[in-house]
Length: 176
Image (cartoon, rainbow, N blue to C red; front, side):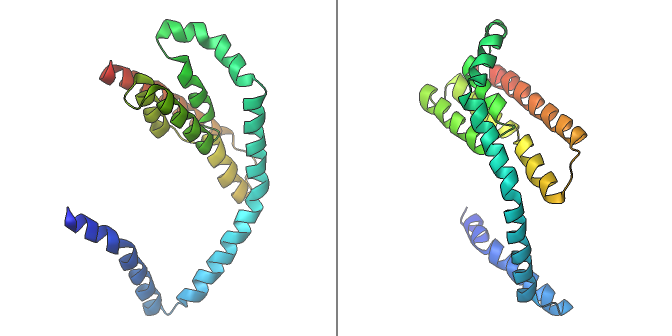
């Protein structure tokens, strides 16, 4: 295992040396290119701020308005029938919107129920099986200036739904 530690320590410096050597061979000014890329990255980050603020406001409104509780109360009978804990639904709903919000919810679930509980394992599996679809689409499509996200949104949310269902099925099969 010590060779793995050595490789992990040297992989990034070696990669940087390869890039610098390649730039020298091609006679590309590596530092100037790096600085120019940094400028472009900063401008991109500034242009994304309105999209991020909009997403954070939408998440806050959704959570604080009681919409989450309303949705839970409406689907609770179906969840009980299927044997799905209602505690997991907020995580499934927030995960496509906010990675940080979902991580906070997952941490709360694990703290409340324990890491080896059904809900703790399900929350952890769900966190790893889904993505922050709306956040990703907002950032990438916003950066590229694309306004029509129709099919990407449908496929992303479908993939999240499949991840949630697969998490429930697999954790139920493996741990119950």
